Image (tube, rainbow, N blue to C red; front, side):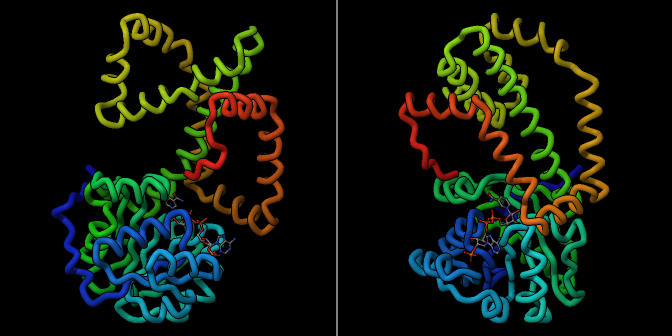
Length: 333
Ligand SMILES: NC(=O)c1ccc[n+]([C@@H]2O[C@H](COP(=O)([O-])OP(=O)(O)OC[C@H]3O[C@@H](n4cnc5c(N)ncnc54)[C@H](OP(=O)(O)O)[C@@H]3O)[C@@H](O)[C@H]2O)c1
């Protein structure tokens, strides 16, 4: 059984006198820096770019270069994009690490797949939110907190868990529950969701929309019915609180009969096999190697894959539906 840490399991006093340096002030770095700052933690931001340094200063957080933040910090929270992190780590982080420092990652990716290996004299921790950055801030501000995975990969000081849980509490992560997993488990679960759940969902929605539109249903009505109304996200939101089956069972009897009587129709063995193949690629590190090559190649394949999705007629129909519904196109997740 995995262990789940709650609010009382972390003590911010375990961070007292320690400077937390946030390396990277982007999607996740900024919300975490602000949460920690608002919890009274001594936060210093280290960035590559002047703009993000300026942004941090405007937010009222002290900001400097990455090297300086590592030199001055005792808890170094790595929040750069995973695919560029190893190069930054090698040049601007590892030369300045000191005995008794703690390196913390927002994703286990680089440690789990061997792209970053910390020296034996530092602690290594993982504090990986299961939500997008904006929600990490919103749920801190609302008092709800957010779920995350935590791990200690290396405990050089004998204090690594105490420090990590103190940090998790200050960030707002213990209020939502912090589940202990290994670095490998976090990295593999994260990739599995991205490579199975999202493509399957994208595929099902696209195929359903194409079928319904080809049968003459109005595109705006189809897309609204499938997901633009927000009913789908409300369904998931309820499932998050009370479970999938109770949520399905809270629908009308017509809905329940329709769902349960058709469930097996979509029980495709090929889908299970494809999930296994995808998990094996992730687990053996083949995907991580493929992605490292793709990054070195300037993301050529990624760009072309994104373009081919953008070129689908459905993307245009979706934009028209969003315009008709008066939705903003600058929504920032
Ligand atoms: N995004 C999320 O919601 C989320 C959720 C859970 C975990 N994580 C983990 O958190 C970490 C940070 O992810 P993120 O989404 O916050 O990163 P991000 O916003 O994409 O990037 C963070 C900062 O890194 C710098 N940066 C961006 N691209 C760069 C490049 N090509 N080369 C060098 N520097 C670059 C930028 O700062 P400058 O302006 O200073 O260059 C940027 O603000 C990752 O380990 C990720 O897996 C993220």
